[in-house]
Image (cartoon, rainbow, N blue to C red; front, side, top):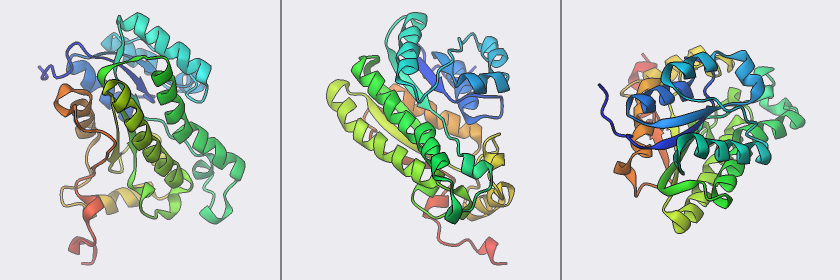
Length: 266
């Protein structure tokens, strides 16, 4: 039986799609550790994936919501409080999408309408989510908000398109809202910069399999598996990390600090 690190905690998890998604792995671990939560994704995403069946297996309710819609977010958090029986202790934002990346558009030939859509879905949704939580007073004292990000926010990865800028924006929103939430109700806000992970979304990035191997070879510990990222998220949702806030936390097997690994030049 898993350690009941999150016993009594109530949460909302964004972005779970199928059993390969990082958000689902996190939801499964949170369930094992005693948390209660609702799951949410865009209505179109819910039609594409088996989330309802997965959620039924752990007794979690699924609430469709467009994360770019303030009205949907307000309804989501109000319903979640009713279902869970109180204010929210933790929220996970695991949302990211780029039509430019899906269409394999070169960084020097991006469609800017699609770029704006990427920013809206992948980053501005985080600010909207935090703003609705803040103004609606939905978060419990000493709660925790976590967004998933990637090192392309700081480094150049040519095939990642404008998702790189989107992740930079997400991380900045987390730092800024971390100040405001901390002052108001001791809620902390952090981002986790995760290794390349074999998810449905990740596999859609051009050259992902090759890059996954590169990251694994570069990192002294290898790429961090999804299950370990889920465990790390659980610690940030727990009371063990009450004074960790406004941080971008690398969970990448050491990749972010490496310059060169001799394995790559043999």
